[in-house]
Length: 123
Image (cartoon, one colour):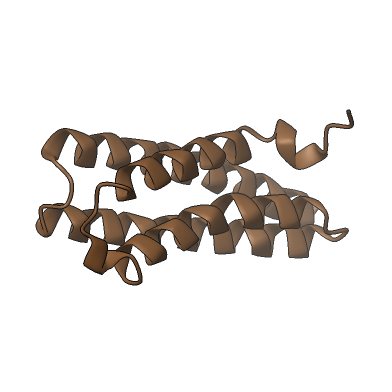
């Protein structure tokens, strides 16, 4: 089986884990949120890993960096939705803190990837 370059990215691996966690977490949400917050959070979490994967297939460093930027933005959007989920009491405090920590880890990895892409662009 061929392993693609994005599968080796720790940021992608952690983004994938985050998406799985978001899917499990949102299964507990009220049914009336299925087309609202549940759908939004799931799409955001998928977007993080998907943009990292798509960016890895781009030829130019500028394009690679742009997809990392989009993944980072999706993670911030997801963080906002996690905060709201906590406000609405859809998730408990422990799950909230755990999700925040996981999102922060993914953000840090994406930021490092982006910075390395930009640094290579300058040389």
